[in-house]
Length: 125
Image 1: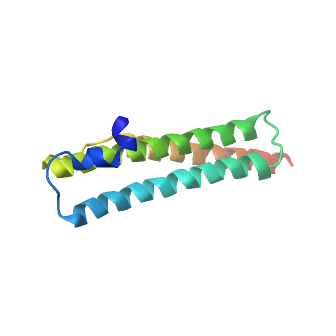
Image 2: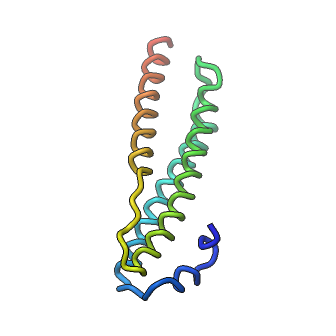
């Protein structure tokens, strides 16, 4: 975690790689940050714009889940960027992660749950 806030710490490890690899790593980081921002925006939108649902606190629970997931994605993006940059500089294999699969499953399950809520809400009203 200390390396997150010390940009020179990454450069003290290994040798300077071809800049294309570092820039590709940075683009991947930025893609994760965009995903994080989208989740946070979705959480704020759910909290502010969804009408009250028949299930008590479902709207608030959805908003909180999206906000927490967005925060987790941002932190994971930063950690993965630092670990990947160090691996590139040391000529090691890039770190592997189950996080993309976990995120995809969470978003997929959440989407199916929301479809169920929409169907139930529309059928009852």
